[in-house]
Image (cartoon, rainbow, N blue to C red; front, top):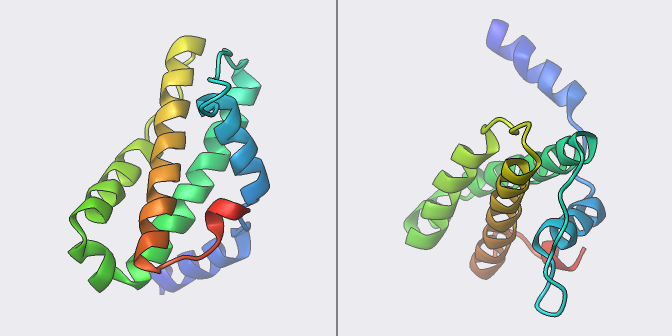
Length: 129
């Protein structure tokens, strides 16, 4: 019964991922080919970015679990899912440089996992949001 209550509570607290904000965060921490990122986030910004990336990673991992037969059979996707689970729970360091390092890892895993899941046909159009 406790498991069922936790599930209902999680559903009530569920918030959809704002992919536009996630993509803005990716641009901020990873930059692009023409404009590499070069900023140190203040603690509030770092926390907001981390939460956005963690929410995106959680949604992607959950989606991958629904197609576990396909996603776990693909070595690259399975590796990314393991990385995503590990980096998602890392605490955000107080040092701005170290926080940026974690944000870049979160962003990279998010981007790579989206690409991998799109390649497998597990998700569609996420990278275009």
